[in-house]
Image (cartoon, rainbow, N blue to C red; front, side, top):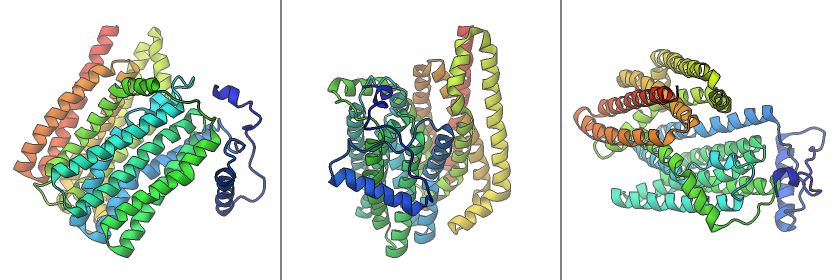
Length: 458
C-alpha cells in the first residue's frame, strides 16, 4: 500500500492535537498515555496519526536542532570527560568514541538517502530494518575484534563497549528516523535524534560526576540511548507511519548490493579522517587524543556549516545539470561554493586566532597555547574537508562516484603511511601535518577528476 493510499484510511487520518495551553509536561504526559494505550491495550493499529506531514518550516527547524545536538555530542562528551577525569583518562574515552564513530559508518551502511528516496517503497521498511539489524551486529562484532587485537585492558574494553553500544543504537535509530522522513515527517526524526543525543550526554555527565567512573558513564550513556529508542523512536515510527508490508531476503540483498558503493566511499573518508588518531595511539600519551579532537572540532563545524548551505540545493543542482544549456551555470555554482569554502576557512582562521585557544583552555581546563599553530593547520584542513565533501556530492550528481571511490582508496593508503612516519618523527605535529596533507591531496585529486568529467561531457 502506498503512503498516499494509506492516508485515506479511516484509522490514520492526520488530526490536530487538542487546543489549549501546551507545555512540555503536557506533551510528555500525552505521549506516555498514548504509548501505554498502544502497548498494554494492544491497540497499535487503532491509534490515529497526531502529527502532520508536509510542514517544511518545522522540518527544517527541528531537523537542524537534531543535527546540532548530534554534531555537538562528541565535543561535549570530550569536554566533560576531560574536566571530570583529566586529559589522560579522557583520552581513553576519546579514542573509544572515535572508533565507535568510525564503526557507525558500518552500521549505517550508507543506506539513509537510498531509503528516504525510495518513495514507491520498492523495498519494504521491514527489509530496511532487517538489513540495519545485521549491520549493527556486524559493527559490534568488528568492535569486539578490534579490542581483542589491540589488547585493551578490562577498563578500556568496557569503555569501548559503552561507546560502541551507543553508536549501534544510533545506527539502528537512523533507519526508523529515515522512515519518518520518507513519510514527510522529518521534524519527528529531528526530535528523536535530539532526545537521544541529549539523554546520552546527560546520562554520561551525571554518572561520571557521581561515580567518577568512565566505565559506568559510558555504559550508562548506551543504556540511555537504548531507552530513548524503545520509548520514543521505535513507537513513534510505528504510530506515525503506515504499517509496512513484510520484507524478503531478496530485498535485503538488494539493499546491501545497491548501497555498497556509497558505504565504501563514506567509510573510507571517515577512516582517512581517523587514521592520524590511530597512528598516535601507542606512540603518544592518550592525552594527545583530547588535544587532537579539540582542535579538530572547529574543522568539523566548518564542514557542517558548508553542508547546511549546499545540501538543500542538491536536487536543484541535479536539475540544472540535466539541462545542457545550463552547464556553464552549473560550473559557476561549483566555483561559487568553493569560494564559500575559502570564505568559511578565513572566518575559521580568525576564530582560531582570537578565540579558539583561550576558549579551549577554559573548556578543557588545560593550556592550548602550545597547539596554536596546529589549530591553524587544522582549520585549513577543515576548509579542504568541506570542499572535498562538496565535490564528492557534485560528482555523485554527475553519477561518477565509483571513480571517486578509487581516489579515496589511494588517499587511505597515503594517509596511513604518512601518519605512521610523521607521528614517529614529529609526534603530535606529525599527525596534524599528515591530516592536512591528505586533505590537500584529496581536494586536488577530486578537483582534477571533476574537470576531467566536465571536459568529457562538453
